[in-house]
Length: 433
Image 1 (cartoon, one colour):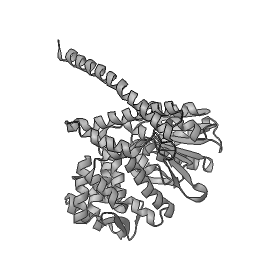
Image 2 (cartoon, rainbow, N blue to C red):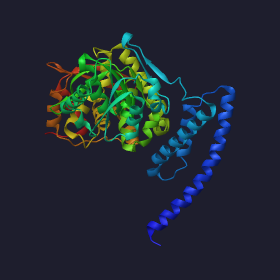
Image 3 (cartoon, rainbow, N blue to C red):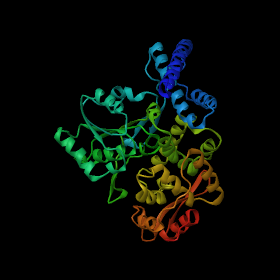
Image 4 (spheres, rainbow, N blue to C red):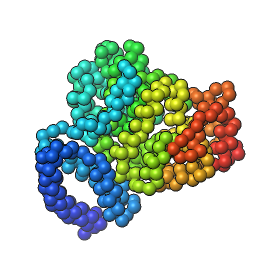
């Protein structure tokens, strides 16, 4: 017997054991559902699930497999919730919504598990719907939205930042014109930040603006780009140079959509959550330091959304307070403009935060980033970074509005010349070119 046959026999034996344990587990789930139904309790208990994920992940001795076991456990919990909902006779639990209050532009962010499959009842899709996704997103997500739409038009773009371009923007406009879209139709983004930014910009500009729904499927887009109304395309290699503020009508941030993400993509998104914790929530930052963030994803996403919601409500158009959300982005975007696609957006933001902190805060940040598997060292060409900084959209004759964290949980914004930013860059990363 060769190694392949032996491995397959082991897998088959494990599958048989898992099937027996699955039936035993679901019998217990049936009893849990009866208890909850009798007492009117919600099916979804994120605190309980977070505790179980943290406890159970410690049972896996191989650190390389721990993140995959957490994904396995999260999927098992999703199946259990679905079974409970079927037994109780209800849909996914409501009550996990976050209201972004912007007057007539207000909208809800819904964060219930499996909410993507309820798109038909939660979004107004009884019209022409341009569904924008990319090749890296599981096709079933966009297809679920298409099935719920009366007249869907599905456009799948190549994966990656390169799709946030004028060529792809024109492709979306062509698709809408060809399908006879009017001002009464809508656009739905299903994917990460690239899909959301590009589709939102198309919605903002087609016939002077049509309805836009955002369905983020990555950690990065759920904690950051799905809220706030910033839409844009890149231009001549520089990020978000051309764009508009265009708030979505509703956001569906389904935590179950994250179950297919590899560990690097989860860490990529958590960089933005760490950013918001560093500027605004010392307690959330301590969660990153003291707990396993992978077991607390739904809580981290909700708390990050609440931070950004408060900032956006106070400063929708980035004339003041909202600038704090750019922490790590000034140098991060410069690094990204020279390193993409080798470095992901969150990885560049992670690097961009370090020079903008005092020594003690930087030490704490470095430890968190290393724990998440994010980079803390960089050997890029300082000359290229300086050149990119001069094209930063926040740049003015007297400098760039840069965000500093001197103490975890608070921040300040200070007009800073490019030369000073490069001094801070070199102090952390080195380089003299």
